[in-house]
Image 1 (cartoon, rainbow, N blue to C red):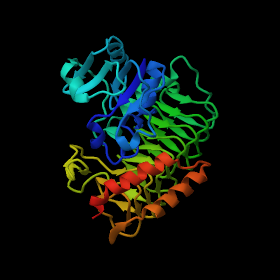
Image 2 (cartoon, rainbow, N blue to C red):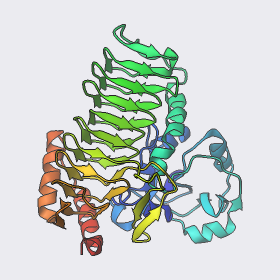
Image 3 (cartoon, rainbow, N blue to C red):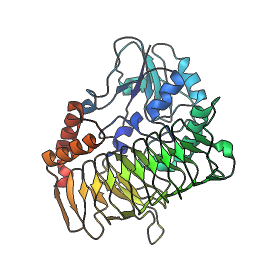
Length: 391
């Protein structure tokens, strides 16, 4: 049996974060949605996504396939429901296809919806970009239970102070924590393999520091917050998710935000997460091509993969920065920074694709990696498809 995570229209609601990846590759909690399903099903997942992503993210081979909506996180009840599906059967909830089993290696979502059975599904769903940080606490707690069940944490050094239950701190192999204050009263703290929490850092759970990442000296973190793998973080962070391979290595505030992969926030960069009138925050929607009401009072910065900002950059409440943007200068840049833009408050122009790609290659090389031809093609497609927003 093949297991495939498919994208429905939710993919468009999660732009610019999903320009470069299927929905299930979003990190929420400790794991990506893909990794959650692989843990529950004990298998390797394949993907049915947008055409420009399909060369990198493989379709299943021919044969019996169970298709699962990539925007839905697994729980034991949902896994039990889909495991009982026979060929030609599916389940849906509130008009959203959850899973469908068939003998093809692709599904037509509309046709599958017509025959799927309506069920009650309480599993966590990621429908909009702001769900990633607003539902992150629930996801961290769920992943913490999944990853630590029946396992023992490494011992915590006596130089640290724990406020709350010490069993809610889990330290993976190779992780280092010294002279930190860890508060688990609001949720667990997970410290991934070969990661480090440096001296003077203060952390309130729920919190996840993924493998090979670091909190630099004196970092202040308010949960729920996730720092993805291979990232360095400093300053002050509140209720935010960094997908991975990104840095916010210096002072500055990041709150109620989502930062993609291969991003860099310059020293003393800050974002606002609350309007002066305390009203609901609006975010630019790629579907509506205008700002839409999030229904949230607190909402900060959404930044797509490969974007960078210079020192002292100030982001206004509800800013969306697209893929491959280079942001710098004084004042507040616009709340919609188009993909592959160069500039800031004083004006923006198109960031030449060849120059952006040169920077990406240097960033990869610093980590001993090389950008693949598939990734280059994906970025080139995004560059072409988003030109209208730069005009």
